[in-house]
Amino acid sequence: MANKFLHTCYRIGDIDSSVAFYEKLGFSEVRRMPIGDEAINVFMALEDGHPILELTYNHGVDSYEMGTGYNHIALAVADLDGTLAALAEQGIEPEKPPYRPGGRTTGSRIAFVRDPDNYRIELVERGDLTE
Image 1 (cartoon, one colour):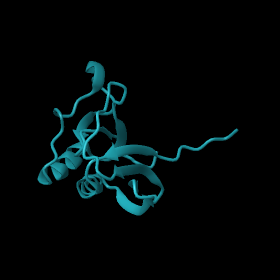
Image 2 (tube, one colour; image 1 turned 30 degrees about the horizontal axis):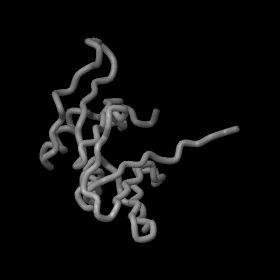
Image 3 (cartoon, helix red, strand yellow; image 1 turned 90 degrees about the vertical axis):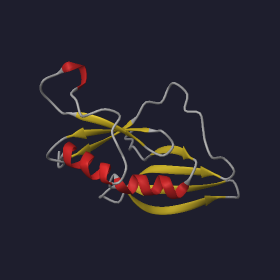
Image 4 (cartoon, one colour; image 1 turned 45 degrees about the vertical axis):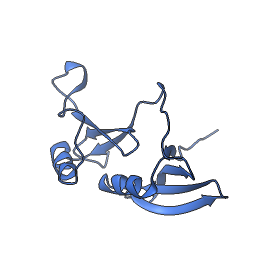
């Protein structure tokens, strides 16, 4: 059976701040889908237009406990320093400066940022994003 990854879902406390944050990372809002009177799903996509991130706002809930199982999602970026500089201009700072995990001296550098609901996003420097 062939399967295809569709999306990741986060529960969010504020639609506008979450959408604005992900737009700064290169996402765009594709559509909003009300779920009865209880929630609104906001679908976000990268350049290809495929909605890979679903932001779910449940009416009357402004925060969630993340638990210990969740860690992060990852986005490839062509230029990590340039991306972080552009994010800094918009008030988004990394948890710590870019680094190579495990003390490696070669390979991709990474940095983590956090969204308005404290979800971690790993930015992975890839240079050529066509791969």
